[in-house]
Amino acid sequence: MSNEFVFRVIRLELPKNSLCVVGLAIVLFIATLGLIAPLIAKDPYETNMAERLKPPSLEHHLGRINWVETCFRELFTVREHL
Image (cartoon, rainbow, N blue to C red; front, side, top):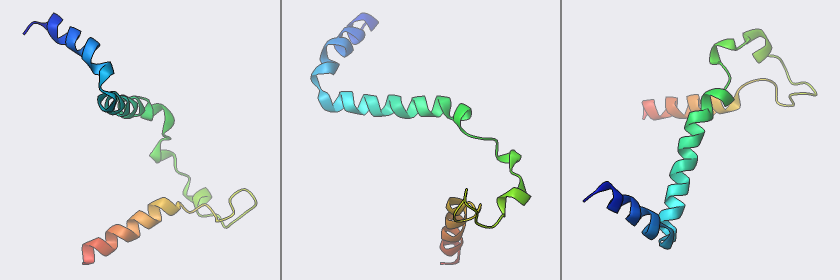
């Protein structure tokens, strides 16, 4: 099979299969997020511990504790003990 044949089949047959198009869109979306993730994410080493443990205020109603990190830590601790 030549490369021209493969590209022609992809170009002509792919749009006819909607499930394949949706799957390709999802894969491209995840790949794009992976490429731009370093631009979006903050540096984990820049955490100010004194600022992180402040009590609740008008800006942060539940305080500054990272609830997602705390929940995952508890979840995996329970899994290790089972």
